Length: 179
Image 1 (cartoon, one colour):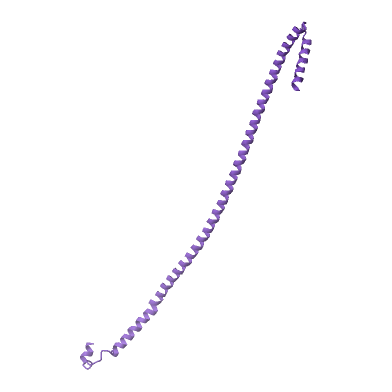
Image 2 (cartoon, rainbow, N blue to C red):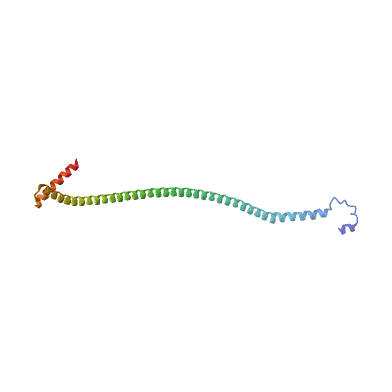
């Protein structure tokens, strides 16, 4: 610029209109800058943008896949939970049925034991009664023979006669008691 100013005549130049040499240098510099941007920078930026788009879309797809998998797992867990609840209810019902069966078995065994004890008591009572009846027969027979001997005035010492008399007397008592 000093050159232009030194030449002299350009001092009255309009500052709004550029000098022709500056236009040429500016155009060449702009063309070189555009060439460098188009050749090196824009493809690199496009790759970066594409990688970022791919990463975002891949992230979205992965998120959708993860969401779908989570929903599928949730449904599986719900199905397993429902199955577990069904199994638990079945086990509970089986346990109740088993408990009722055990209860019935225990009640049946208790009834059987009670019946056995009652029957044993009845058998013991019948045996005791039979023993008492035998003892009473012998005693009543002896008393009856002694009484009959005193009344009749003869001795009933003969065993066969005595036994026959006692049996007849007791048979008479039993038939009178049966009426």
